[in-house]
Image (cartoon, rainbow, N blue to C red; front, side):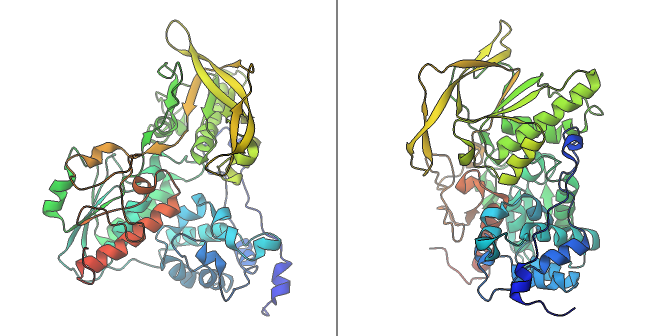
Length: 483
């Protein structure tokens, strides 16, 4: 095939991702996005201009070598595409599904300035899925160094740091508080957006190839303290995430039927509510659910609620209930990915914009029966740059509700800081660490991901794990001192 000229590439339209039918998928937890075929992936790859100064790479938190892997893909060399991908990204099948590419690599794509960006995320997923199936690019471990590293947490930051340090020949032990690895990738993201098999496949392969010792059911701060780990290990990386939820301080917040999005998603994911009715789980949400917030976690929670309501209705023969998003700003200020909002709308989620809860109402049994709200209007921009919502006086109203789920952000669990003298925290409970290297104020302790930044993205956590791993490797090799 003759090489296309840039103007010819720009005429190729971006290829849509095939999805499950919206009316079908709202009643199941199977993956919504079905993935590109090989033909579609190679045609989409033809759109890449192979820029000499690739802005897309600059927009990626881990610096994936995007032009190189796309070029190999469109030439049909899948092994080379995987090799280029894995220079920087150990988890492409995961990142291709959950990264906010529209504000990162694709947001920086030159084609996107005047039209539609190359579908980098969808191509990344295609390459990642190929590697999951073929294992054409095995991980190789360098000769043993005799150095031991403890990685606390097996989410995106932890697994990235573990892989990048184990490859250098260090003996890595990864501690996970739950019964299986994956962290937020497993308990926080729904099956319909990130299948558990993808996460388990990526992690188990890395653990097996590199001889990483995985210890589950270990809570650092209880099973071992940080100071005790430092007695046995040469370096410790904290990638414990941010699992402590925030709640509104309004009347009724302690009623039965009020929960955090973290709790709800954990129940759905770990207790297999997504396999209802085959699994009888303690997730009971009634017929009307309100999710307060409009970030990605809120979208995950409300879309899970919509599916549970549909599954319950199929069992009882009744009409499906209602799943609501309650958000105090307008649609233009929604922080969630546009794709997730679009999918939620397609699936029948009801959006209540410019609406702010002021009280949760309950009955004599202390069970939720309603949500009292006020209408809002947007005023002048606040510190975040978004217009500040202002209450409209006299606008109170009540929505009947059976369950209220708070999706208002999270902070790190403080338990990891037990017996960790010298490990400083901010007023928000996050660890103080050098963002370039991940070094904390405590010698031989690194940290990265949500435990440092607060709740953020999977790829930003991976970037932090990768930067910390590079510094740990340099430190253990004697190439960098601890100032």
